[in-house]
Amino acid sequence: MPQPLENESELFRMILDHVLRRIDLTEAEQAHFVSVLKIRRLLPRQYLVQQGEVCKYESYVCKGFLRSFYVDEKGNEHTLHFAMEDWWISDSMSLHLQVPATRNIVALEASTLIQIEKTALEQLYLDVPAFERFWRIMEQKAAIAQDQRILNAISMTGAERYEALIAKYPTLEQRLPQRHIASYLGITPVFLSQIRKNRSGIKEV
Image (cartoon, rainbow, N blue to C red; front, side, top):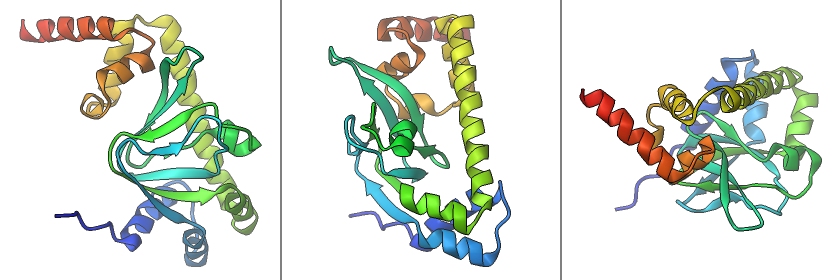
């Protein structure tokens, strides 16, 4: 029996709550924001963005889990980011410069997104200036997270990076396959398996 679709008003309430935790908006400004949003649903393994196409939307995850990855010339996949509920995801360089995407973004679970198109976002900055502050806050948060990831990569062992990742996102192993976690951490799946085996052994002692 098919599951009922999420109520649109509930989805818009989710993103409004997300925004209002960071900036103040009048009722009219909230209504205007909602008017430029679009709902999109993805099936598992369905792409949000494919490498080589131009990314046109910022996407907020209401439900589901997505993975961002790069495919090199040898066909190897490199996991760059992931996104779960209450996160945003896009190819920022492709979106802002309107150049071909350098990454793929695919749903690993049935996902429900709320999207805002680039042109609508730029108009929103003019219509509701508070949104410039909202996106500055989000971009600062993303930049800090990226800086921390780079620092971890050069200052921690693979095992330490794994421990830090799982401590920060306890449900990640249930949602992201081990090979993708290994790729995200910059280690081999075999090495990750050994780390997890050693970790289990320590817990059992």
